[in-house]
Structure formats: C-alpha cells, structure tokens
Length: 177
Image 1 (tube, one colour):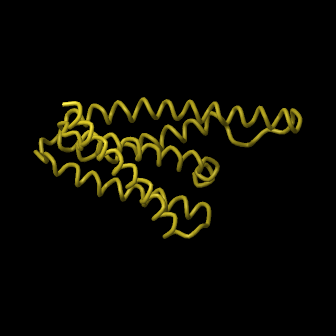
Image 2 (cartoon, rainbow, N blue to C red):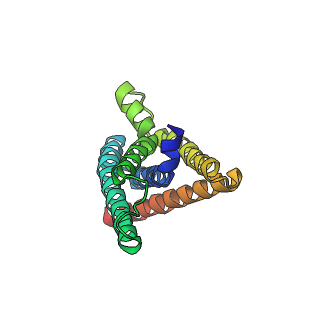
Image 3 (cartoon, rainbow, N blue to C red):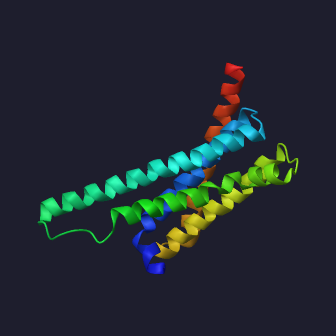
C-alpha cells in the first residue's frame, strides 16, 4: 500500500489539494454570497464529483502522453512504470476524499438537522485547514522535505484561495443582487 502511494504521490497530493481548494472555494464563495446551506451543499457535492472526474481524466491523459513521448524519444522499450489508469484513480480518490472535508459539516448539519447556520462555515474552515496540513505533512514525509515548511505552504495556498473566493462571493453578491 505504501509503495502504491509513493508511486502515485504526485496524483494524491495534486488531487487532494485541488479537491480541498476547489470545494473550499465554492463553500467560502457561496457563504460570502450569503447562500443557504442547502445551496452550498448542492454546489459542493456537484463540484466534488464533476471536478474529480475531470481531474482523473486529465491525470490519465497526461500520464499517457508522458509515456508516449518517452517511448518516442527513447525507443519503444522505454515506458514509465506508472500506470495512466493508476494515476487517474489516485487523483479521483484523493480529490473525492479531501474534497469532501469542507462539506462534512454541511452534510452533518443536513443529515442530523443540527441548525448550525452561519457557524457551519467556521467549522468547515477548521476542518479544511486540518486537511491542508495533512496534505502538507504527507508531501513532506514522502519527499523528505521540511515538514513545517510544507504544511505552512499548503495552509497558505488554501487560505489564499478561501479569502479570494469569500471576497469575490461577497462583492459579487452585492453587485448582482
């Protein structure tokens, strides 16, 4: 299992980071626009599955193109060890798993009728920051880079995306409505 993760680390990190960032951006943007929890949940779930599929297709085609180019340049016997299908599956799975994190509070609020309202965003922020930290840690362990630096880098990128999205949601809601 560890070997499989190492073989597809790029896809796990890329898919997971993109899953968290895009879903978190949708959640924060919709919250900034004062959309209700039901709209946030619909947009978020639609994003997770559609974008995960898109990312998986992109990973598959990218890996396949890399292998075809390598085979062309080095001869037909030279092929990368990584499977295009494995890369696409790793991307899809990590996108879905980590992409669900910003939505977990909204799902729990819907299923258990918790009545969280606006506080759902606060809980979602904390859960998603933990997911970013986890991705940064995984990347650091697998690539043997500084853990703190990797965690701070992923946290910073995630927070930047959320701030941009929330601000745009707020501004656009005022302009459009």
